[in-house]
Length: 439
Ligand code: XLS
Ligand code: CA
Ligand code: CA
Image (cartoon, rainbow, N blue to C red; front, side, top):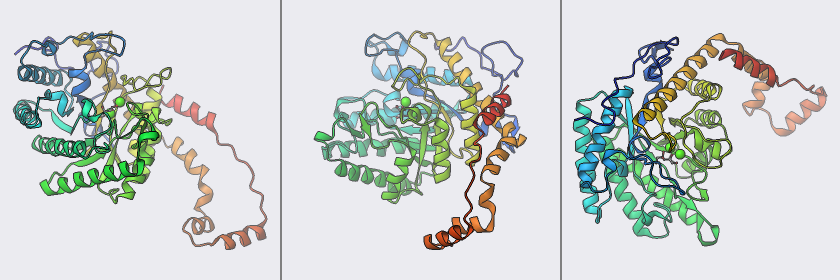
């Protein structure tokens, strides 16, 4: 069956000198780097929602992307299958190893929960059959618990327990489907798990509800023998004014509170990091340090706009440093790099969709290779190591290990009476070193 992507041949690796735009210049999945193929470090995924379901509408304008399966006169199940056929054709063109989806991306909502869930399972079977004829695997599945009006005050954190139960039911089925399709992870993003005004919100109660839901998810994962990771995706705001999963550090505190820090990791999105006032690499390094780095959603915001624009990334230095911190954190394991990124509404052709992914894939691959080079070169790591070298002395090690009380430290320091001298932080030297490393 032909789709809007049928005219495109599979994008190949061509090497850095190639000028043909629909070619990977850096993404050579078979290239061995740090002991394994580059493709296994990066584990790229295509996001169903932005690539197949997004129609380019915004609060001020109508749809600009009119794919055949979006025709409202079609029978919805026929449309869902046409969309899936196009999805797998896009996966063929991009030749990336994974995809991701929400329940609502693959099939519409029906009048009753029972019918909605029946359709979800029908489409999961359809995807499973498509996967048998394809190389693509599922990086993660998730439930859309934010679009329908019933979720306007949250899903797990809704004041109405019936919405909590509805959400839990939907998640149970989405976890079943994710397991059926061999998913590596299951993601929870709490878009409306937060509030618009504290004036009508019992925050303590809502956090208890959220903790309960996450505990139920972890228990169910073990019950059904799902061996993927459960991931929470931080985001500080949008659509809610304040969201409980504000950033990686906040999520860690929440996981600790409910005893789930060994069970749940994070899916970190670049644009969510910047909305929280952090860099992507800050969030990655924080998760690495806390031992909860799960997976990445690759995109970028617009520095001139204060919302989640989900653009494809173009910043080589930022990407290199993000990959540096991924490598220093021990890699992505079961996670991957999911393109939670959408083309602009003026980029409405199928070809635009392919260019967007080729650019994003190549940028991440290039950044990863440069990060490896930076580590192998050693100069940058040495600057950092030298900065903390004072902590290597036995005396300082005892200080860090808690072998000195506050009054002992005071007595020793007063006896020595050494006035510590300021030392350069070498920021500009480091910036020059890094810029020269990506030339
Ligand atoms: C929205 C989120 C969402 C999650 C999955 O901002 O990025 O797309 O990744 O629900
Ligand atoms: Ca995301
Ligand atoms: Ca986003």
